[in-house]
Structure formats: C-alpha cells, structure tokens
Length: 276
Length: 268
Image 1 (cartoon, helix red, strand yellow):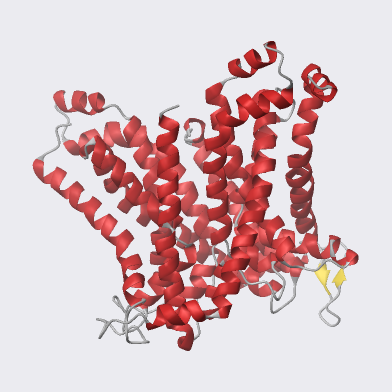
Image 2 (cartoon, rainbow over the protein chains, first blue to last red):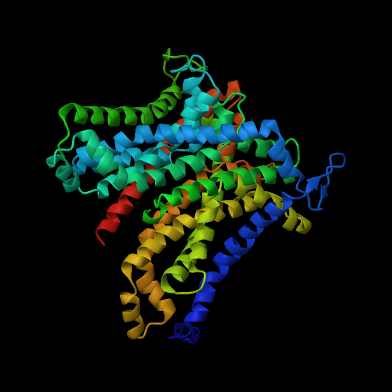
C-alpha cells in the first residue's frame, strides 16, 4: 500500500473532504453563489439613460411586477397554461399507464415502456418543431398558432413525464387489492375512486411536479407555436436581450421559482411528497 | 382484475391513441424530410432525397453538430467526475449537511432553465470578463456540466446503495490500498452506472437550448441553437426538417444503449 493510500485509508475525514471538495466548490460555491448574486441583482436598478447598473437597494422591480397590469396577466396566464398542461397530461396519461400496468402482459409491458421512453431521447426542439409543422396552415392539423397551440405542444412534450411515474405507481399496486374490491361488490368506478386513485395519488403528484414546473419555465415552445402570446419566460428573456434590464429580469425570474415553491408546499400538505 | 369487457377495450384504445399521438408528429417530420414540396404541402406530392443532400452539404449544420458534440463530451466528462465524487461522499460517509448536498445537486435541473441561464450569464460576465475570458464554448461546457452532474450522481448513488461496502472491505482486509481497491473492485461495480449516467448527461447537454442561449458567445452555435435560429426562415425549412429527422433517427441509439445497459444491470 502506498503512503498516500495508507493515509487515506486511516482518515475517513480526509477522504470525505477530498470527495466533497470539487462538487461543492462547483455547485455549492459557484452555482449557489451565482443564484444568490442574481437574487441580489433583482434589488438593483438600471439607469435608463446610461444603461449602467445602479447598486443601491430598491424594491422598485418587485413593485413594478406587482402593480403592472401586464405582468399580472402574464403571470396568471403562465400559471393557467401550466395547470392546463398538467390537467391534459393527467387525463391522457392515466388510462395509458393503467392499460400498460394492468392489462398488458409482461413482455408487451416492457415494449410499451420503451415506446413511451423513446420520445424522451428525441430533441425537445425537434418535437416542438414537429408541432409547428403540423399546426401551420397547410399542415396536417392546420389549426394555426397561439395559446391553445402552446398548451397542446407543451402537453405533448411533457406527456412521458406524467405517464412514467403513474405507470410505476400502478405497477406497485397489487392486483389482489383490485380483485378484493371487486369480490366485495365494488363496481369498476368505485374501485377506481376508493382504491386505485388514493393509492396512486402520490405518483400523480410526482408527475404533476414535472409537467407543472417544466411548463412554467418554458419560453421556447411559446416562441415556436405561440404566435404573439407571452409567458413569464418571454418577459425574462426580453428584459435581458432587448431591454438590457437584468435587475428586472432577475425579479421576474423569481416568480416561477416562488410559484413552484408554493406548489410544492401545497402538495406537501397532501402527504404525497413523503412517499415519492 | 374484473373490469368489464367494454372498459378493457376502452383503456386499450386510449393506450393506442396515446401512442399514436406520441409518434405521429415524429413520423410527420420524417416524412417531410423526403417531401419534394419545399413548403411541406400535405399530402406530399413526391419523394426526394435532395434535402438530405443539402443538409449534409451545409457547413452551418456540420459546425453546429461538431460544437454540440464537443460541448456534450466536455460536460459529460466533468459530470462523471463531480457526480461520482459527490455520490461516494453522500453514500459512504455520514456528515452534517448530507441532505443539502443532494439538494444542491438537483437544484440546477429543478429550477427553470432560464433562472440557471441568467444566473450563470451574470456570473460569467462579472467574474470572467475582467480576466479577458469571454463567453464561448468553455462557458457552455461549464453551464451544461452544472445541470448534468445530477444524472451521474443519481445513477452512481443508486448503484452504491445496492452493492454495499462488503466487497471493498474485503479488498482492504486483503491488503489493497484505496486506489487499488477502487481500480479493481469499486470501478467495475459502478461501471455500467457510469455509462448510464454519462449517456443521460450527454443527451441532456446535446438537447439543451435555454442555458446554452445564455452561456454561449456570439460565435458559438450548438445544434439546438442552429435549429432555433433557422426555424423561422422559410428558405431553410427543408434543411431544418432534415436535421430534425436525423435527430429523431439518432435518438434511437441511446434508447438501444440504455436498453442494453439495463439488461446488463439485471444480470449483476
């Protein structure tokens, strides 16, 4: 055994420090530091004439955000889009996951899981582009662009993230429970409502966290199929790019994070997070 | 389960319809890549391989592809090192703030991409610019690595949890030092987890656009950035479509590899 090796073997603390050093320097210091700096910037302002950053503390960005009619509409619209996407994905995913987990044989099931997973490896941009092609006038659907198109495209993009957790939850659900409920006289709907739904609810929540948060932060799909619609992400993007107002962009960027934390706190109350 | 016949049929239909919805858009892109009509008139008037030739000849596409591959490899390499180190620290040691390490690793992927994007953009410009280092491929790699660590971390952590430390202790008892043990015992144990995590990391980086937008300099174009820039140019539509079709076909490679890896895991 080399001397360095012997030293490391004896000192668990040194081993731990070495193991943690690089990951923590990168993610703990650099990344968290960048996030903190961004948050601090949200309380600064930009001089409209010179375009230089003014580092005196101000609530102005958050006040603008809270009082601006436009921003309130955009925030509500973004949350609405995220909720609509989550609802559509849930309605589409649940029957699919149920058929996969409870009706298909083991061999078919394996293939079905692959079939649902495969599109996740396909590029996000390619999938959004596919919907642009289909929705454009003269395309397969030809419905045109707008908020509805955005909701449909986002629901399509995140569907596998809803199917997979629900499928996993249903697969863990013993078939004997469903049979017992049936033997005791419960109808299919009753079995669903009193046995299947309560037991798979944590899985549904897990899926909804993906679909909700992914929709909330998105601004690319809106640009591709949304026509002129704006979501929170677009406001952030436009304020950095065209307006060059990083402080305001930083303030707007805290909105999806706060909404997401609120969503997590809400679902935490249901007790669904503990069993994820 | 005693579901009625119509209910079973309905559920199977829902599954079939859902899968159709998943695959039809991808099929449309594949079909349009050989559509002779450059505005993708539906149904296609004729078939041609002209656009594939045009895409292959496009220097913009080639450069973007090469940039994406380099960014992906760089980010994956960093993610493999950092993710493995963090996984060993968390799984093999008990220390104050252990939960926080997991949280900090998951954070870059849990937060909206645009938050990570502008935070890094801001940090790079304030920290690196005084040293004369501008935004470029290097900053893209750093940005991608930040959210790729989690895939390697999760895979290695799961593997370490399952394998336990018995074999490593045996190796140490037989006189092997920590480095020898890692080389001969630990590394073979976690190899397929590293491959799976690395594959995911590469795919994640290869597909990323939001963080890339904010960390790439003016001259750096990854494939997603190239697609996005050309998406709204009607005269580029056929070439963009071929790139999209090629990416759909290429996405079958990681699916196949992931399948091989997971069956590999089953035999351990």
